Length: 289
Image (tube, rainbow, N blue to C red):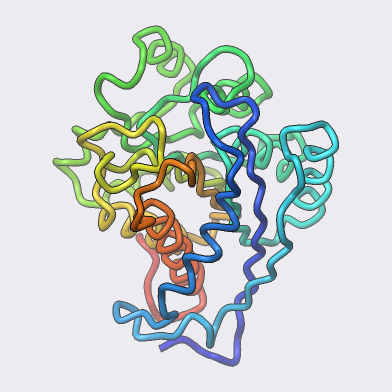
């Protein structure tokens, strides 16, 4: 059981980045939709035998207005750059949020940071878009040997970008490799590689890592992605690691979601899994060793 006398404060911030998306998408607010979907669930975890509301306090800072503009980027930098204690939960928007948020948290100095992504894509495109955050971070100084990308899909990436990632020292764990390994084993490796030397960890959950049938609201999702249960396990176990300072949830277009809101509802569950993971740090539930 969790010690209810010791509350974990988790800071929540929405930033609906979308203006530089390589896929046409609506301006419908994903952060608002995910917050609304939380009402579909309770806060009781059978797995950990705890009520999240007894042990966690959500400090909801609202949404950054127009985060794709210079003004919005400055607001994001001010909010994130002023507090490294975390943990932070960030709701996108597209994957442009990952570059903006990690740049703000690190204050542009990446020596103390590593990156773990759950994503079907390398995000190594040229330029500035939702397809380029990993390249942008590498170009800005993030050490490629401290980047681990999990769930990369066949027929969703280019050979040139794969070569660039390999040359930078990025550790790739493909969807095919996940079939042969346990979730706990993959998380252990990711944390050991990206968090080596005690680095803080930023975690990007691009929802298109999942199978397209369960995330129709993700424009670039493809058949054959990870299952919702796999993603939920990955998030809880990863967030239980003390080095994780922030996690974002990205790449949902609310206007494309199914009538049953399955994409947004899964994103809300990912939020709850992250909270459960954060709380494991102060409970008798063990992190992955």
